[in-house]
Image (tube, rainbow, N blue to C red):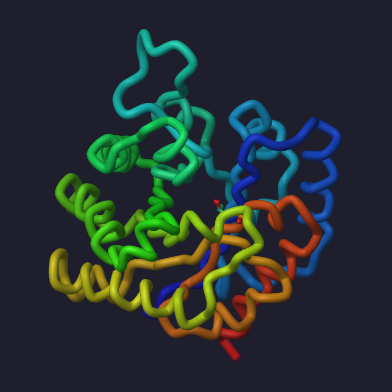
Length: 253
Ligand SMILES: O=C[C@H](O)COP(=O)(O)O
């Protein structure tokens, strides 16, 4: 079976209850491609998750933007994987570059989080990606491979993992990777999985792209053979997110 197109909307630290209501209404009223063609997940800030879950059409799933690295307890300000499971939240984004960069989350810490979240039954969108400096130094693949390796060393089952390749220089900057740049890293990542995990995992794991994806550039990116979907930031707060979801039909055309 082929890899089902996957579109995630990462709302980051944005929104008021009124704005969230508006986004949910837009999503609920939109004509979106069938769940057979595209898997759609939106990721509101923690505080809005119950509200979004209760109002959103059932074909669209919900993700948290982070969770704690182990069982909950005396960790002020954190939210545990167990709590997400308890609330019926199926997905979590881990290792986003904003957390790796601003909050100094190491490859190992992210790997531990991925392993723990999976062990609790969550599905994980695991983010990897290089900075501009690293790209210019020619170390893109080394960086992305090291980030992926820290995950691979800690998990056995990849069936509940989606890898999001998000070049840091493309996030929120309007500087989208060209389809060729995205494809180049996606295919290298898939090769890395083939060599270091297994051909089956390489073939079945979805590798999605994130970084300034918009309605205007999504179709060309979606046309790349190893781009299996998107993790969208800014545009996921706008009606154009619907067009990005529907770019899945490029694959099934
Ligand atoms: O998680 C999403 C990414 O950080 C992309 O954000 P962006 O679409 O605003 O560039």
